[in-house]
Length: 152
Image 1: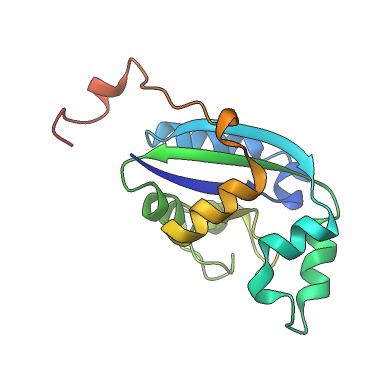
Image 2: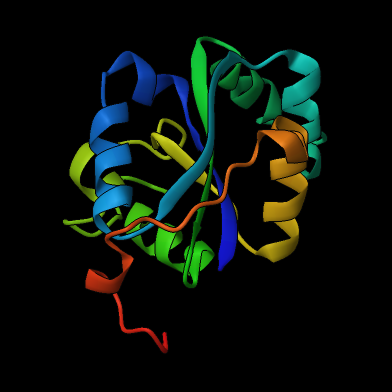
């Protein structure tokens, strides 16, 4: 099983789309193994977006991500990183395909509802920023045999 991190951004929370996003991820067969609602501080934003801090547009991003509560979560599943990123769609909601979360609900580059880790290293780093090992609760749903073959 692979783990990935998602962050339901302030626009997702304010627009009351958290349940839709969570439902779509669960329907795909991904397990939520950790979840918490929090307010991101400027310090945490700088850690999360470390590669962007020096860019001219970073202050706008920091203002947005610290502007309201977010929902941080860890998902576990087969090929979870790729699956989540494909479910999210292109970063810019105007370019995201219909049927993806951003394609169905977003019309903005920045207010694109959900962040998803872009690779295994990023997933590990982001998970550790938001969760301790004790907060991760892996489990095997009883429905798993009806979701995928035993050898997958």
